Length: 325
Image (cartoon, helix red, strand yellow):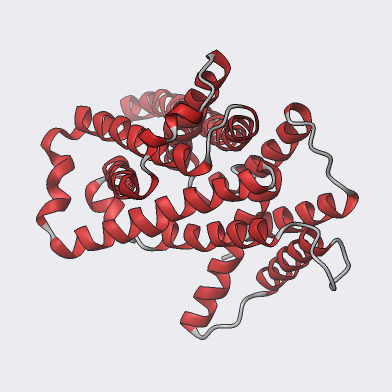
């Protein structure tokens, strides 16, 4: 009996090693896939603002029109996808009045507020500046949570706050505190989109765990889009738009690639590699928006603009880095 056990050990060890190697390879494969998906999501978000700006400048599209239409179409697509998986489960949230109220706040202030103020900032300036201003949101969230918990931020968080604040000041004033280098409209809408992003991140809480991410976002988009319709009245703006293949292509990019696919890629990336790494990699969004604005829209950024971009993005990256235990 002892002989048999002795003979079995090498084989068992070999099998365990093979199993560990297989698990390690699968984990590496998932990490690579998650990384690629997250970067793709950030890239698609970045180009959406640039394509939107193109339609504003050359095709007669307005920020209010594209946001209204984008929310409704993207909401329908996301809910359809969720229905294919959950069936009638996507309607569960409507049975809980408190959760419905939170979802409405999330949709109206978080999603619609964020989208509308962001695209209004893009319309007034460019996608690079609008995106970087929106990226002050993580620093705002850090300050908000510190005040809520009556706990001083750590050294890295303070450094991130200084970098982000300094970057915003450089971007807004170019170092001359007596005058603005961007319009008040851009600054107000850009920072307002960051504030709306706080609602977008904090209001849902555990609702996405309970009902699923895609139903929550889908309902939020659809309801906020429908809610905007009486105010925007998108059908009245259609005649002012130059409908050609370029305009249609840009709108498709904004709605399908810049909303549905970008969100799907990012959320799958979060599932595979975790929120910290995903948010760090998603910082490719402002870089993409800035680079694409230069290449396709021929926007010229000054040295002060770029220094401001670096400060804000560096602050976000520091906040995204995993903390030591």
